[in-house]
Image 1 (cartoon, rainbow, N blue to C red):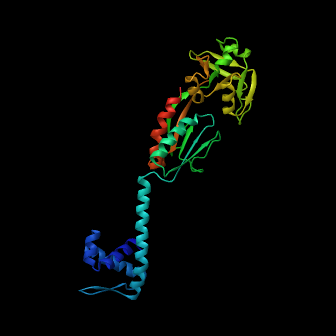
Image 2: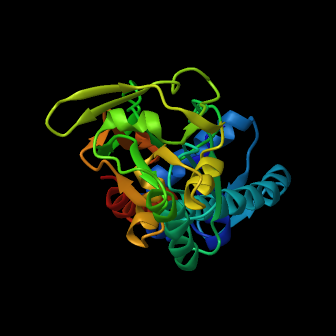
Image 3: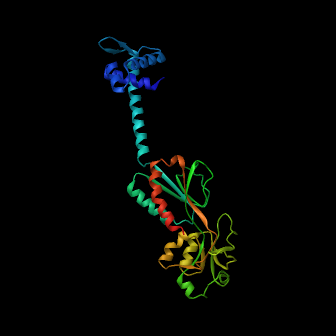
Length: 300
């Protein structure tokens, strides 16, 4: 059955005239008449009795009109709600980032976002697992590599390697350190990644002028928790190799010192990733400008 024909039929009955309904719908009288005739043929019944002076519903037409009027109203309402959904942020916005990412920058963006759009629910998942963005319904991801999929947009935010940090109190009571080889004489705090517990047993450092150093740290304490290692560094338990996004604030507050600032691990990029078909979604479109400058500001 032609739903548009049903809509025209409902309007003809409501207006009580083919001519008035045609004028309101912006259609020729002949088109309106033809669509009603097509609808009657499809249903196999006569819906209207036409005279030169007025229209009258048949019994079948009366039954059909009552049902069709409700259906047309429901479809109109659904269309208006859908249009509104596409014009204003709503629903749930899901964001994922690595565990060792500076979640405070994401939280700042979320707080500002929620002040502007309190009706949107925001979910954040910090994990080193390679999340299936589409399958798990995520809208935005912060990742170390772009997805090799034409359906995604990936904005490069910058790149940085892990850096060495220690608390001032640790450095005050320890021997001076001016080159990577001297790390062997210091207490080190080692992050153990869940996927490969041996990958950070060696610290592979590179200098700004291209020199390389392979260090086997004397691990005083090791943990798979980046937060735990950072806490231990803050209280003076040793030197840690940390993501700069997590310690930049501590360095600026002088709670941590950037040790051997000319050295780091090989840098890797960070990307702001989102599905291209969702880029037009208001909830995503409004979040990207809030996240992007914050992420860029914490990547060295």
